[in-house]
Length: 80
Image (cartoon, rainbow, N blue to C red; front, side, top):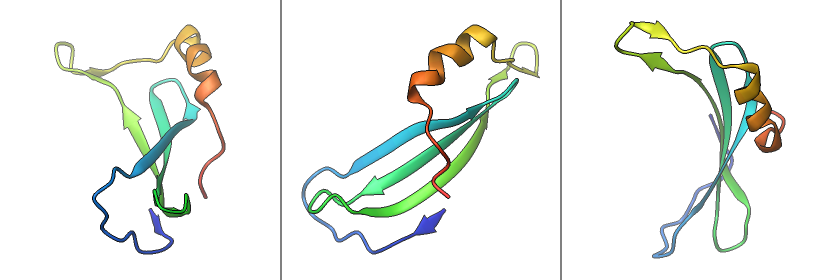
């Protein structure tokens, strides 16, 4: 996570942009950007990694090739 500048409180919604950085066999990396609604400037950039867990089997869900292909239009470079 990188803080770029303060985000002043305003009584308006803040835009949060989310995209797929990578979709591997069992993990997703998502990029985030929190944007100031007043001027559109980014205030925070972040990267997180997710693993999809199946409680019934106590295993990580594998991401299929077809699922990765569905995510392709939402893929963009890392925010860093």
